[in-house]
Structures are given as structure tokens and as C-alpha cells.
Length: 178
Image 1 (cartoon, rainbow, N blue to C red):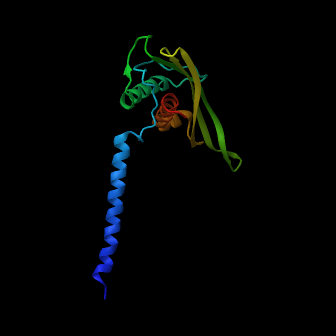
Image 2: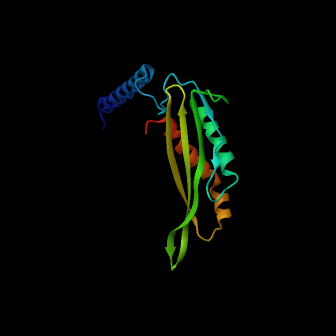
Image 3: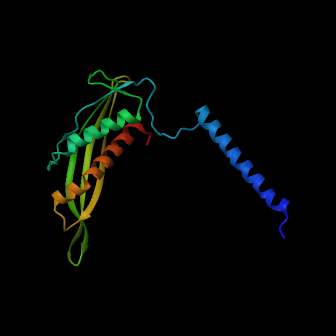
């Protein structure tokens, strides 16, 4: 036979804890103590110009540059407060180029290649016209594919991952304190 007071006693602390957690969460978000985005843009920076990211790699994938530039522009517009401009007088001017696009063997099985790796790298320049500073950095992403695929087959299968991976890496380096 269960004691009604015994089971009811366990519901009250659980409800109290949930309400307390909710109140603390609301207070922290309302006070601006904690934010869920790790984007860090100095308050004086209002405008950005993103130049076309050229392809200067030895092997040129003709779709990579325009797709990467468009994806990065879309990400900046949708996830930052910055206004896009075509003026060279923008607070930040971002430019860059695809610097690496190579294939190498990454796995061997029964004396033959079983896995290949496509490595794509970009060199990015950030010109800060407000603070008269320049910054440059490189990002590189690698993508594995089955060695039975041709490069063209792998490019078709990996195209969206390549664009997403590189644009995320560039965005994080530009706007996060990593």
C-alpha cells in the first residue's frame, strides 16, 4: 500500500527545480550575460564587402569559386548584423582565393588505393578600414571518397559538403574569437 503523501512529496521538488531553472535561464538571457551565438563583431563595424573568391589552385573546379562566394555572402547576411556593400570604403573588406585543390591516397587495402582524400584550401584576407589593420589566414578542409570513383564523380557527390565546410570555416575565422 502506497502512502499518498510519500508520492506527492517527490513531485513538488521536481516542479520547483524546473521552475527555478526556467527563471534562471530567462534572467541570464534577458541580462545579456550569455548569448547562444559566438559571433564577435566590434560595435564600430557596420558594413562589409565580400570580393569574389578566385580559384588559383593548380586544378580548377569551375563551380567552386562562385558557389563558395555566394554561400559565404548568404551566411554573412543571414547571421550577422553587417550591411553588405560594394564600396571599397566598407568597414571590412574580405577577399581571398582557393589556394589548394589536391587529391591524395588516404587508404590502402590489398595493395591498392581504397580511399582517396580531396583537400581544398583557401587563403583569406580581411582588411579592417576602421582600425587600419589587415589580417590573413588559411583554411583547409579534407573530404574522403572511395578510390573507385573518378575525381569528377567525387566532386559531384561532395560539392555541397565542400562549399558548406569551407564557408563555415571562413565564417568562423572571421566572426568568432577562435
